[in-house]
Amino acid sequence: MRIEREPFASRLSDAGVVTIGKFDGVHLGHRAVLGQTVARARELGVDAVAVTFDRNPLAQLHPEASPPALVSLERRLELIEETGIDLVAVLEFGAERAAQSAEDFVDELLVGRLGARVLLVGVDFRFGARGQGDVWELRRMGESRGFTVELLPAVGGAGVDRISTSGIRALIAEGRVSEAAARLGSLPAVTGEVVRGNERGRELGFPTANLAEDSVGAMPADGVYAGWLTRAGGERLPAAISVSDNPTFATGDHRRVEAHVLDRDLNLYGEVVTVEFVDRIRGIEKFDSIEALIERMTIDVVQTRDLLDL
Image 1 (cartoon, rainbow, N blue to C red):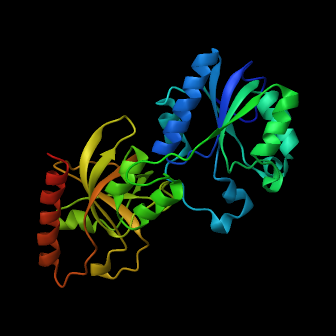
Image 2 (cartoon, rainbow, N blue to C red):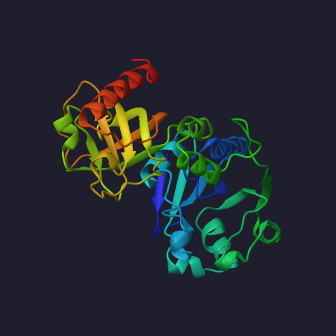
């Protein structure tokens, strides 16, 4: 898969079947759309093209309302590649792109850069400054510019009629990570640098990798989870994961992700790792004694092994 990022130096494709979206999380609905794009492109013998953004457009337009991304941009691109897409055009959604008219968006990008022959979009697709363009306007433009617009139905699965990023984000916020994974087609995850904490876990016999506050991903509800920690080189390690502000010690810490890698004592400081959540073991409790906390953490590790089939 070829990845092109703005600013573009030249025309990216002479002819393509194009779909456009944020594709945050690249969930099963997104994968169905991307798969249809690939299938249609193969029928026509042209490029299968996905257009996405370097950030959620809300981060530029209404930052106070912009939710955390489900995955980093790099992980998003990896997941898109799995669908067979030939080319991804990553748009820089800054002030200039936000102010671009619907007509200029079509002429400059879809026709000028991508040579669009077919566009695959949902019925609620909007484009251009303040969302001034809709699918009907897009079809009218296509008649004079040589492309057609095909509307895609909502994609259901995993017990719902329509899989949506917002619905997945709500499940993660409630700690229902296994249900979120069923709609995502991959495990909910947080990626970030391992930073020094108060090293209390090490003192208790359960050393943890503490992720930085600016880690990327939707943090699940407070609780203890079974999951995996993956290092930058691809090594994937089983882990018992805590998401909390450490209420037992009343430190006033911010909510953070701490992963205890099973059977390994690793120095991960400074590494960028991905922590994936498989299932929730329990909520966060405030313990009356250190002994009670250690006893419960020992049980958490046993349950982690069971959930990961170790």
